[in-house]
Structure formats: C-alpha cells, structure tokens
Image 1: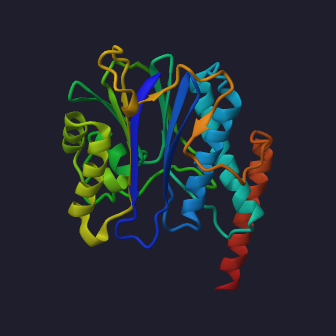
Image 2: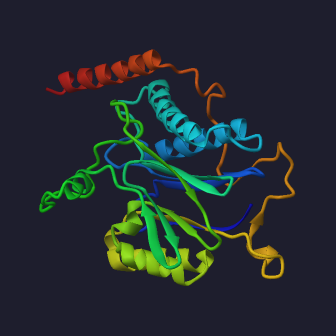
Image 3: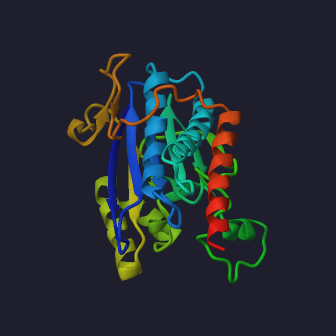
Length: 302
C-alpha cells in the first residue's frame, strides 16, 4: 500500500478538546479513526480515547497482516468500544456514562469499508467530486432524509452514540474500490458545522492533503469565531503511482513491512486485554447499576 495522510485537531473556543483521531496500519491494511466526545456527559474525551484504543488494539490483534472479514471487524469493534466505555463508567462509579461519536475507515485489498455512529463524518472525493458521505445519526438528518421540514430542529441532537445506556445504532458500509488519487476525509462536526460540503470537497480536491487539512481547519475556526467547537480532521490520499512519479518521502509505503509489524499513531494503554469478555448480560448489569445510582441521587435531591 502507498498513501499519504495528514491530521490536525484544534480546540477552538471550547474549554478543552474532547476530539480524538489517529490511524494504525499493517502491511496489508490501514485503519483510520476519529471520535468526538460528547459534552453534557462526564469525560467525553475519555470515551473518545477508549473508542480509538479499543479498535486499534483489536486491529493489532487481528490484522496479521490482513483481516479475515473487514466488515465483521468493524461491527465487532464498534460494539467492543461501546462495551469498554460502559465498563469504564462502572469501574469508576460514574453517575453517568461518558459518550462519543465514532467514524472509522478501513482499507484492505485496495477497498474502503467504513463504519460510523453519531455525526462524525467520512467523505470520499474522486476527480474533484463528492463520491460518498456518511449520513449523520441525528434528528435533523432523519427529517431531511424523510423529506420533512427541518425548521427548528437542533442539528446537535443525536439519536445514538457510543457509551449510551441504550444499545447503539451504527452503520457499516462498503466495499468501495479505490482509485489512484482518491481522497478520504474524516472529521468532527466542528468542521462540517461551519464549512459547507461543497467547500470541503473543493478544498480537499484542489491541493495535497497536507495543505488541505490545515486550510479546512482554519476556515472552520474563522467562520465559527469565538464560539467554535473543537475542529478535528484526518485525511488520506490513496495512490499507487509508477515509480518514476512516486515521491517516497511524501507517502507511507508498507510493502516492505513483515507480517507481524504494526504501526500506530494512537496512544495505547489502560484497556483490558480481554476486550471481548464483557457479554451482553454484564453490560446490562453495569448499565442497571449506573441507572440505579442516578435515580438514588435524584431522589436525594428532591
């Protein structure tokens, strides 16, 4: 595989940055992740970090150097991330669960698969045009898709996320066969909430990702001003050019990696190595304990 990648995250006008992003790769597969920890709940940044660490850890375990089932991995990984967030809330005796969105892109055998939960997005741009975009799990997107009026609907209200006490809904899609020069972009709502899709596509298409990502982030910050949300973007350009046109220093090239080699920009640590040992009954017990604690506190405050 040969690809170029660039990532950038800015706090904007918020007190802290609850977005997380990163990528991991082996010789034959590459995983891109972005999560946006949700405000209004405790430790959103921890939920986002747990989501990334969970999928990256599973990827390191299972991609040797490729995955037997990419879509199976994504579906299992999203639920494992949800379980790990619930586990964390239970172990820390939190009064509410941390919550996060998640979007993941995974390339193997030159094909892109993706999964998402919430309103963090993945864009695919080919030949200067938008080829595909994820659809937000928000009430305003649902209204728009149904042809109903979106007047007065808050775009920030989601009907699903990871870490909720309700089982998350998520979408898994693909495969999409990539072509040389295709560009992928994962972003938090701090970008698309300020910059229109047409402008995102145009800016991504016109220049290398190392130039497009900083320009997009600065554009979002400038439009939103002091009230800007966290703005986080990770973008990739997929290329398999001829050796004569290939500038090695500009790309990650995995052909010479051995089967067991794994590389990642995602910080590891703090996770239970037995990622899939928390069954549905254990999850339900943890959720019940959290809900009971919330109810006890509410009763005392009456």
